[in-house]
Image 1: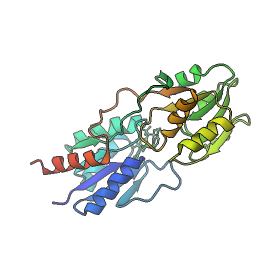
Image 2: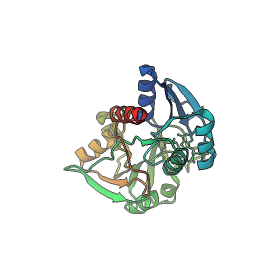
Image 3: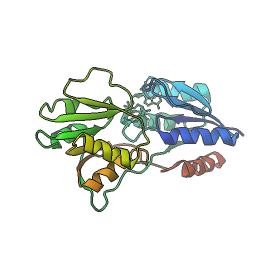
Image 4: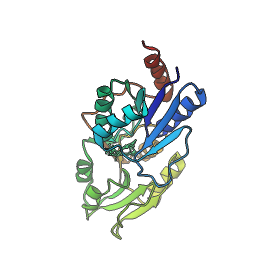
Length: 248
Ligand code: NAP
């Protein structure tokens, strides 16, 4: 029997999974996107844009749309939706599968400081440093409070609110290559790199570039209290979906 699968998206993995399920032709797939990105990349299958109205709204949606299984493929730092999705899916009596890419690990030559939050990351920057801040356009405010620090922020889309004049904004879109990351670090005379532990390959070159030149790096840990990952990549997620849907 074809199943109806809802993917909570916003990541490369979500897009890859939607394409694979749609290409398989056995099941129908809907990807939901929060609607933060003005021009989301195309994917196969249907798209639901915007939130559900919290946990209750999602539970109602699952019932109304006859969703058989939910894959939570949201970003590791999207903390609210994951907690709500797990509860709503379980309350609806449907399988919940969390697809989350593994975090990055420190290797020889890295000079990492791990912190628990963006606020701690901002506090950890040395006085008067030049910081390459790659945490997303909606998370810049703790860094803007450090008026002694020269912030060079890189975001995919322009931040909603104008930035102070002293902040340099680089607009660019992953994937990034090692050579271009090295060039950014040199050109802006960066003293410290700030990143979330997002994992994956598309944005990992900045870590390799920092390692190569011995740059100190502040890594924000993933939020606590999240549902654990059931699959770390698209292939193992597909296998898990098959197992759930085959179960009596
Ligand atoms: P969040 O704090 O966990 O979610 C806030 C609210 O946005 C949720 O309560 C939900 O609204 C809505 N929402 C989030 N993801 C959704 C989805 N896939 N489909 C439908 N509604 C969704 O999330 P966030 O950190 O703002 O991230 C928003 C989206 O951007 C996520 O889908 C995530 O995958 C993507 N993203 C986030 C980051 C990051 O660093 N946080 C980075 C890259 C991509 P309702 O309560 O109304 O249902």
